[in-house]
Image (cartoon, rainbow, N blue to C red):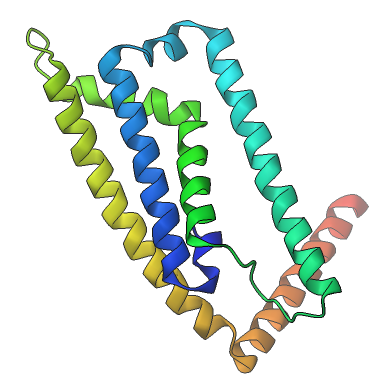
Length: 182
């Protein structure tokens, strides 16, 4: 979601909405009892994890290819261009293909339901509350990230960050050399 916010809040908000949609899918899976498969089947958990890893690799490679194509076209691109639709898809699939989100819903939602009266309506209501809360948080984060990136692009700030990064790397280098010498 933060990567999507680099060009402005619109793509970041789209990624947040996609992630919220993914949370709704997990809510439905918990309500239908499907998420229990993740908890009880190591194979199912591994398959979802592999699918999520492949999707993250796809996103990374796509970003590299976009940046390379932009560079070869002579575009001065400081952040990857990403459409709102692409950002929404990225948020949706990143959430849906993350088995830890399913396990989170499976572990947290039942904790807030009465043990003798668990209903699909109760599960869906709590899932909607969590989804709405996360959506509001992520939208706020998208706006904040879009504002911060404008500040970070100032030449004086960029120069200061370069100097700080160089000093930190030099300190790590000195620390590594010192630890190797002893």
